[in-house]
Image 1 (cartoon, helix red, strand yellow):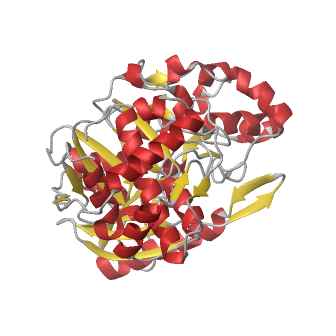
Image 2: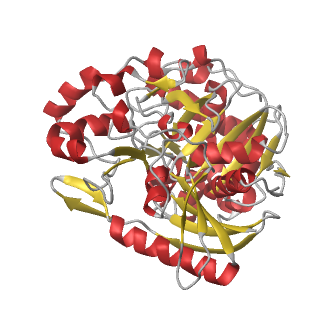
Length: 460
């Protein structure tokens, strides 16, 4: 049995074909396009659908795929009628007008209920739902279902409308993790009746034919991408874990962190795993910040440029994107003007130091798995292992933990084994002066953001 996984990211969308042995047999990629319509930035859904349908069709015809699974980025919802969207899908990177924000933000439930901090833009997608409902109430009136982003694509490809807990529980303001039920906002706005029945991530929710094949292909219920990565590793029996999932966002999930340790002002929140359990989380927009600091660098980063940046004390101080544990400070580069290669080194050091800080804040003392595209070549994981010698570090055998976890859920739902490769041990880097660089960085950050940054404990 082979499964096609559509992994819809904010910056890149991908299709992978997984075999039952965990190998990736084929892949292809595209970039979603965002357009302006009716005063909003919205997804070019038709273009992305055409790409996805074509990619799945090729996978079915060339690899004998028997199921389609979806993994999707957070912060995004879809209003659908019987056959189509009732409003284009909103881009979460836009802020409601100030006069509207003042009204809708008064309706948001308290952190103690939802464990969703009040974040800017559409980082809580319940906030964007309130905005759209105020501006275009007819879109809600016409909608028969409110779907999370992965559930939209599972439905669009031939499944029935369903809800899924890992997506609803992803800092949406729509879920109360302790009660394992919708939040008071859902009932106050009359949305509960448009929330479809729940199915577990990976469950078969429909069938579809693709291309010229006469076989019906199973459509599986989608999953939130970072929670898929968490599932990919938890299922391997590795013991207590912190998962660092990297992409446009760096999401640090530590199920062992006490809920009382979460600070709503620092982008700390509760995610919800595929079985409804609370997962304390901290995050920042690390992939976006890496691109800004590095000037869009792609490819390997020379080790020599890392040492040069350390020796020169070239540093990036947060933040270069909204959200994150230090949202009130504008990012800056100090210590001089980096060359092109040094900019990439400074950017990677920044991401490593931010993750190091996040691991302290999320009370991580267990095994850490570093996953995703920012760990190309293993350099990010190696820096973290050097920064925190008191912890065990592992890295995904591939960079695609979210897609791998999604594939595992699809195989498991059909009663099939899925033998994903276990994560690999990380070899710590041996750069000179890294610990002192980290201390100097924290001193500078603490001066701008309060002593709590420097005082955050940690296993080192």
